[in-house]
Image (cartoon, rainbow, N blue to C red; front, side):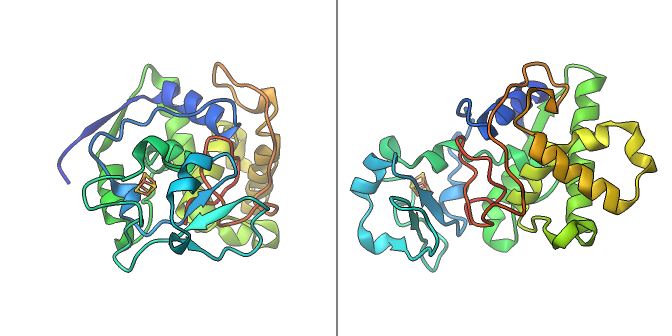
Length: 247
Ligand code: SF4
C-alpha cells in the first residue's frame, strides 16, 4: 500500500498507550472509515461493563470461552471473518460497541514493527503499513527503535525466555515490547546474553505499573502483570494489561 496515514506524534501516542495499558485512560484511535478490526477474524471479549453491547448482541453470536470470569463473554466471527455485528459497511451497534472495540489501536503494531497477523488480518496489516508517526526529537526516535528491537527480540528469541513463556501472538509481542522497551534503551543491554535480556524484559513487564518503569514524561502507576500469568486470549482494552489481543 502506497498510502500514508498520519499516526500522530509518537511520544504523545506512547504516553496515551501506556496510560491505556495501565488502565488510567482510554485511547483516541483515528480509525476514519477503516473497519479492519470488524472483518479480521477477531474474537471480541465482552466485560460485565459492556451492558449496552451485551443487550444488543444475540446469544447465537457468542462462543464458548472456558475460563472466563463470571459475567464475561466472547463474541465470535463468521466464516468470512466478519463480526456478527458488522453489516458489510459498519457496526450495527456502534454507539454501544464493546470497550475492546473502542480501545483497539492497530498503531501498536506499527510501533512494534510487526504485522497484526496473517492473511486473515490483511485489512489491518495494510493499515499498519500505512501509519506514519512524527517524532519531536531524537529521543523519540530512540524510543521507537527500542520498541521495535524489543519486539524483534521477543519474536525471534522466544527460546531465551524462562519456561518459554514469551508471547507468540502479535498483540502479545507488541504489548510486551511497549511495556519493556526500557531494556533496549539502556546501552548496557548489548552486554547481556539473550537469557539475561529475556529476564530483564520480564522484570520490566512486572515493573510496568511502577512510576519508575520508564523515562517517558508522564509515566504513572497501575497494575502489574506477567506474560506467564496472563491469558493468551485476553483483550487489548484500555483497562487491561494483558498480553494477548482480541484473538
Ligand atoms: S462490535 Fe462493532 S465495532 Fe466491534 S468488531 Fe463488531 S462490528 Fe466492529
